[in-house]
Image 1 (cartoon, rainbow, N blue to C red):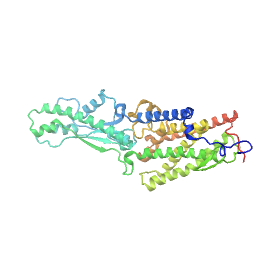
Image 2 (image 1 turned 90 degrees about the horizontal axis):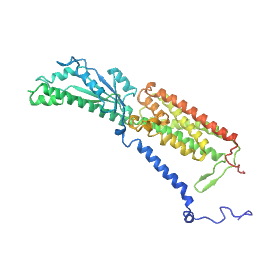
Image 3 (image 1 turned 120 degrees about the vertical axis):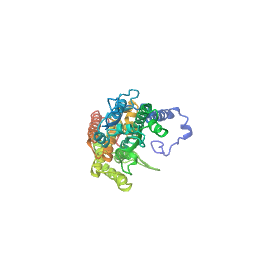
Image 4 (image 1 turned 90 degrees about the vertical axis):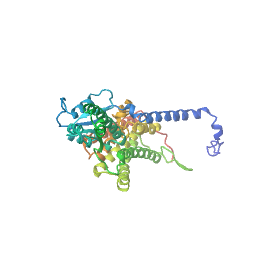
Length: 426
């Protein structure tokens, strides 16, 4: 008891059992927790629950290298006929077939522009014609090329589409050959019924320490988390040090004297500290990922510079959102950078296999932009057309937006005289 009355430490103490009977105490936490659970479920599961149903226009290369003469009575060789049938098929829009030369297809595999390729060899028609002879023993081969650098699921979907197209072509050719050779023996009939062998090869190989094409996604996630968590730790630490937030560790509670400082200067301080501390965070991420764990990585200096800029862009964005929204800023930034970013990143499930809402988000959601750059550096020789140029551009745009938004909001608050807290005495 003090001269002014009881204090929270010496006065009557509330009991949890009594407080639990207050409906207002339950209301807001229940609503927010329920909404978060519902939104997280819809957003995360909605992006991956049925990629086969959502799959549209997956880029796949189609290479017809067949230079053989057409079969008797035909105007086109079999390679041209197969390619024309595949591209003219309107029964499904799951694939966007790109008719390319072998060199062009390899270039698009190496730049991550296609998820796979279907290659018809140069002697395909001649090899099929040889099956009608008595000495035929080997089937002609159509090659399916995969691109694990586009992610294991994307490469698998492309492989399934190309293999199905090749099998359909084999069935069609088999019916024609069987009808053309009615007196074939048993061995020859087996060859004629399914004349094409399908060989699957890796079109753009990755190293053994690339997580089967997933290391780029997890490395990007590390950068986003480093920026997000680091910015929040810095923000809370600065507020505590300046006396604008309580410091409570276990049973110990302290409150430092309030330092007179406006919102603009506070944000400038937090962003400057974010720029400095992110240097350490990114260096440790690379040390752990590349040096200790042995993740496959080339262009190490470029990867470090890119990683720093990417994590810093996230950190500055988080600081801007926290400054603008106050107490709920951490929740808002979590949705902006993580909740909406993961399903729209295209790093695990191809954007062609997610609902349209996520494809729309992918145009500006930070994680998609950052993952494209990491993927280009790790898997595609740091080529600009593999996504690195766009990633750098979007990092610059995102950083500029974060700075403009953050400082515009805090300067507005300062001009209106919105103080953060009443200064506490020393």
